[in-house]
Length: 287
Image 1 (spheres, rainbow, N blue to C red):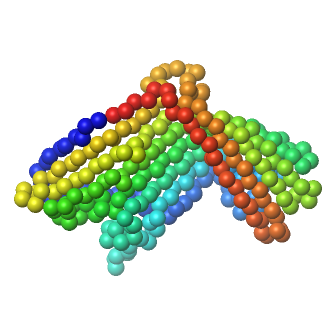
Image 2 (tube, rainbow, N blue to C red):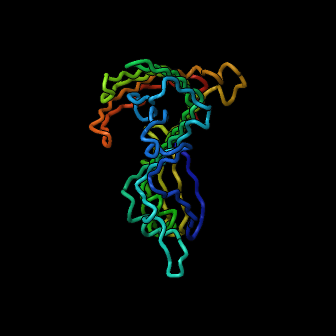
Image 3 (tube, rainbow, N blue to C red):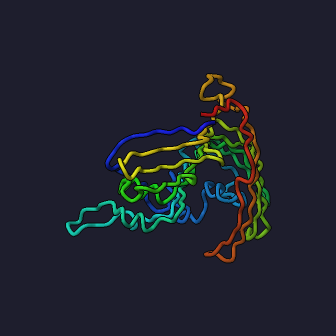
């Protein structure tokens, strides 16, 4: 793919930038597990070593387990300051000073479609289906400086955007989980075996390059982009009911974890989730 070059004349490029700079947070459509002492099945999403005390657990689709996780390095106080008159405003100087040379924003969403679990004595088995959406964006600090202050700080020098990139995926996970408990219910461990079906993936390749250069004589802006690409599957371009249930982009993953109840107030645990892959091969397009 050959580089593309775009020339445009301007004295100064100014953008209005709106940043979702909230705290790294988790918004979940559920009652706090702290209030219920952990007795809700949604904790199973964090570690397969957990299973509620009930004999049977059956979820209500969508309503029983919807979570959104948003992560970045900015706190609310970094981005928003309060004026003397009590009005809040975006503080771009604080945002720029808080950023590193290269930065990251991540978003993950999980919607539970099905969860059926059964426990007997020291073992529990569960079946589940979840809809998953994940997106990551990588960007250099200089890009935010350019967006906030225009190209005045980049006259005569190149703004390197090689670190700009991202990926987004929509996939479905379905599988079976197993949890074991000791006789005193103080220790537990569990695992989940998952079949993954990918419906959408868009990403920038590892060899993506881009740069912006402001001409010091006429302030024209030269934009060079090479190896920009995206890919998606046949599900969004094909109205095939079978493909929408399970696509040709298949993969597998495993979760496992363990917990130990130190006492009634303290529980420690460890887990590794989403250890696996999806083979994106159907309907790939590059542009």
